[in-house]
Length: 229
Image 1 (cartoon, rainbow, N blue to C red):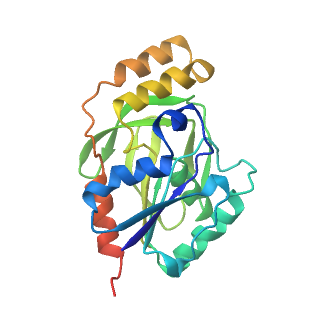
Image 2: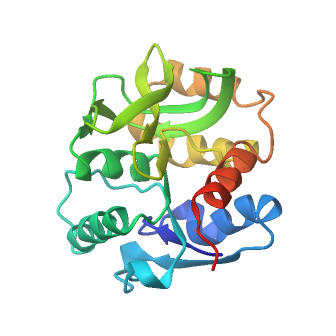
């Protein structure tokens, strides 16, 4: 099984410290899907996207961009997601990945009036409560016609989606850890948040968030939906 991660982060102080987002996502999912061939491409760096026949599954990362931004790499990404859907290639989206999937497949994502939300938050899922780190200003505000909400919070009604074709997405960042999240707040909080918001975000970081949050669910999703010849 070959899974390619689409790295949609252009680059910032966090990537300078921790490395490329694609590599971080490989490290996040690898322990739960060790039999898979995992690789990543820098979509935001305009690297060529794979054709549906070249992959068994894709993971679309977060990004500092919004679905409404005019970037040279976003139109090809949109077209590629449509091709992957039409070919039945399983896909999983995180944050921006969640948003652009919804936008491409008939819903809407946009900047909302909740401000920049980071630290950790609790979400209600069909299986109970889940706590995760996160960082976003945008949200999915209109559901695609073939999607169902699978996680939500008071501030974020559409925190996760599943589709009638093999696709899942989440607004939160299951790959984040406490050190990464604290650095994110330190590096970007002053420009996006009030002092009270920064302190509240910092206070929420030492939460009991599992290191490999959502890995087992995502791995099971790919194994269930990939046809192995």
